[in-house]
Picture 1 (cartoon, helix red, strand yellow):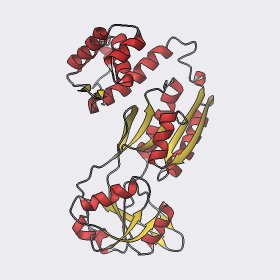
Picture 2 (picture 1 turned 180 degrees about the vertical axis):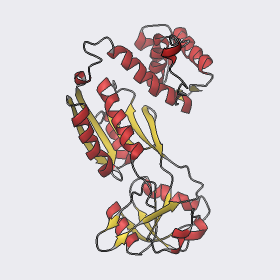
Picture 3 (picture 1 turned 90 degrees about the horizontal axis):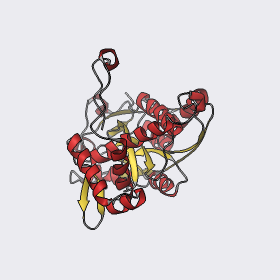
Picture 4 (picture 1 turned 90 degrees about the vertical axis):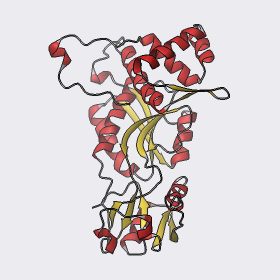
Length: 321
């Protein structure tokens, strides 16, 4: 949930008004989100259940949104608006606590280890740049990293072997919070000499009879195939690959087309380059997100690293003209 940016500097016109809720109410809300229960949150906070319920009701009334779905069997489940609000609450409370620490406003005081995971498909364009900017901007931070597929990264967040993960927002389980960075719509990947490159958008009917090169990775396979099955058709799979380099090589050599959400400009040495065009599909278009567990303390150094990740992702070229 992105808050609107002010059209002018409020500090120039007068004091900034405090919102109609307290830090304590935010902490009650986050505890309920983490434990998915008013009763459990109250027990951890050593307050009464009505106090937690009242805090949530006040926030929902003030914001004008529903923060939780109430399910008898599963307890409290964050809504989409609730998830977005929880991200801002966690960062806000952490920053408020950090203000009490000595030297909290000194960038050189940012220190500590942060373990970052990144989806294999775009890790090569994210991790090296992140290592550079952290080394230059946050010299006292220790950044460790790994790359992997979706399930590997989610499991790392669950077990604590990862603090942050950069991935698509596919089937994010309860207990994992995400911060949206940018959308990543499906694209058709083609050799530049293909007749369909003249189109501004490509539909399933345009490519259904063409040989399809499938990126056969966990989650990716099912998602790509659903882009066809949602239209009641199946692709003609010519090749299954497990790496982008092989996919790009086969496409550039004219052995078929592929589908990707992330397709930066790429030239295969000795063969040629690839191009991409927007794909019209009924499947949900994912977002690239930063994810972390509710159990993660989310220190200020992690917030600084997330800020750098967001900047890198924002400037990535994810389409190949």
